Image 1: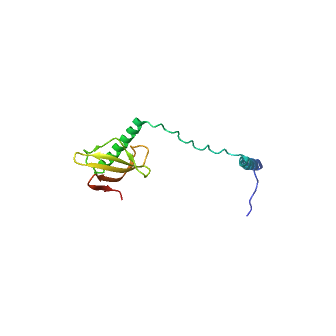
Image 2 (image 1 turned 90 degrees about the vertical axis):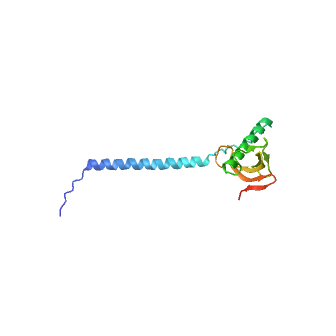
Image 3 (image 1 turned 135 degrees about the vertical axis):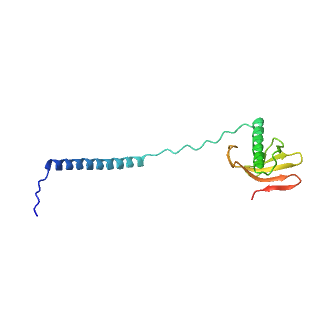
Length: 150
């Protein structure tokens, strides 16, 4: 079998020129990336500044009372939502007593017939978030524990 072979020389030259250009650009890219890596290795990246300590908040009795009222209202609402205390129970006092456990508070509630102590953990910084108030115990004064978290 006989094949005539007549190569197209101008097309072959164009292909080789294109391959030469692409190869040269690839080698230049690799050299540039390597040079940049070597340059950056010698650079010292400054560390982030240490976090600033929070400025001491001046003690404001009116603000503290408002915070305590909001905490106790949220705790009472959670006990009523869970069905532990009746809907007609009211907050009894304006103070949220802190305990020895960080983030745990005690608030008082009352109905006409009984008084309650609500012990809860605060699990967020915004009271409107779900699962913010984690009830620990609800005790009736003189009647024992109504609710105990397991």
